[in-house]
Length: 391
Image (cartoon, rainbow, N blue to C red):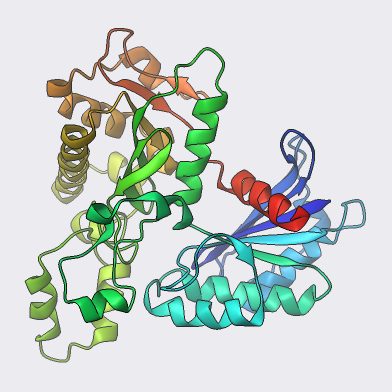
């Protein structure tokens, strides 16, 4: 069986094909179409050996999401590539009623449309891609893999909000996100030869979106994102946690609407609002004081949050993952320095290396082992789809 994995963003589609083999699905190719609805879309498409497959597609069209989906369909339909037998999608939020990864039915699609209110930045594009791909590939089974499922093990004290019962009955609670990433980290740590599996683990997924998750025995017990992926620590274009009274203040401003405030919180806040850019690489290159302040606020937000979770859960290890977590040594150094009171000791030469794969970046006598581990969300989706399809 060949499994097509689609990982949609608001302006991008990542896609990959896996062969369902034992003990693990094997990647055959992966691609990403970025810059959808812009004047300069970019397609990266390579097979497992690294060969560039994009020239065979000619002109890349992505003026609309429908154009982008058609481009992806052309890519996966190249004559020398095996056709998919099943399709799996990363869906950020399942809404209040869906639990667990599952096959997409008309009933599931109805629930996904209802879930848009929980994740307006992520779910609409994902649903559009799901529906269009189901139309284009009607004979295949399609499966939704949710970013929240990993956090379904959290105890009540970690997910219940101190709000009236009627609201909680509507599904207002902490859901947590980046679950597929966290699950992949746990799987890689378990499989690493000679590495003691950390009984208490913190995972810092740092990218355009950022979250910190606490795990005990590999299961989520606490996390920073809440009802939506807007909460928690400071992010690229999102502010993280705010005083609820500030939201009321924003809504009372002249000409303010729910949509305008929502757009500001999702697209115009965070590092972008503070430093003029949401990309960490641009901020690091800038000598402007706003960029320096943005980085200080970002790092303090992370240190304060990770230290709080460390005080609660006494972690044996801290993992950095995501685009910033994997590639920005200065962010990792700032966090490790902020955890000195917990006995974290960074091995500076190891931290500066730009190596691939799982690697340790702490001193041997560090009380908290520090690791960099790549997120393997697509592989986790392929695993779940293979299991669901066989079932």
